[in-house]
Length: 328
Image (cartoon, rainbow, N blue to C red):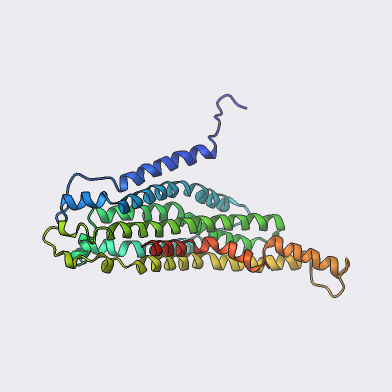
């Protein structure tokens, strides 16, 4: 070892550092501000921040912010390895990947940015403006989606698309490479599911915190008739569930084409290693046993239970929306 070489910090160290930074960001997102907004009194803001629902939202934001800074580590590492893999040539697909990435970010942003943007341009009715009582509320709720999109969603999605290119373009694909690529695919799918599931949970927790204002503190709103201040109408629970379903569909659009390519190439690999034959040299029993074992290893033909286990990360955004809806 050379004298000037330095030991590389282990993964746990960086996970701890980025997790701690994320926790600080999470605390800052919902930190108290000493002033009121033009529409909402200081008493309303304080009352809102003293509810148990706000505390739940604060905890979920803190945990989510930590994970949103930790999950980019494996996502970007996986993308870097795929990009540098000599068996993949992504250069012909660079423009397509770039366009796909932009479209993906726009589609992801839609559930989170439409209402804050309308609020910023005064396009919402007064009760719905008042339903976001924190100073800078609209900017606060956009911080986590931006971090999640650029830090994790983008590299994880690009990684999945590169894996599809890898599995389809690699001429001398063997079982070892196939299993390595498949493991990366499942890891990236899990990261996608977790990041979007957490985004939906944060939205649901925000809704619960906001609806806590509806009855006890409506009379604190400046110049506003409490009877008009109906947050259940402004923020129906079904909207959170719809966001979860929408983001699950988005994950499916990213994952399913690559999954289909893996299954197709996996079957081709099985037929290459154990080609169909009228009279197998080792006999039918040995041939069928070996073929079944290889199909299970490559997961090209699996049981319904195994398929469900594989698809659980795909459903995490929908499960997050369903959980928030049931709690609300």
